[in-house]
Image (cartoon, rainbow, N blue to C red):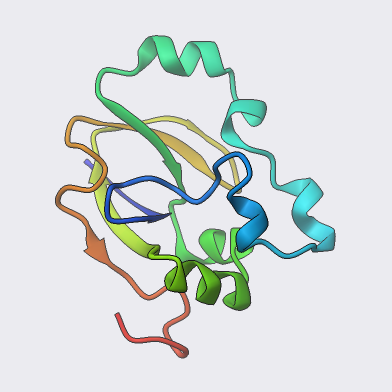
Length: 123
């Protein structure tokens, strides 16, 4: 088992949905360096090797902070999202900015809320 971090709602869905990211994301210069997992990795290979529920996240909180600024995260909290820590069964692909994982449990089960910006929020 591996511990990872991700942003998700109570149903286990992440905030990167078509049309939804416009509600919380802000323009920044470094966004061109943050590619979605299905662009960075082989979508087909990941889908073929998955045995359970797949998702994307980060190994560390500093990696998560690269994806979500404090202002963006505050907007996400207001929209019902939070940073969580969870155990995953396998890491299917990983780079220095993200990872894709496979988990037998649904993504909303057995997760622990975690402060993405510890000095600005309480977990």
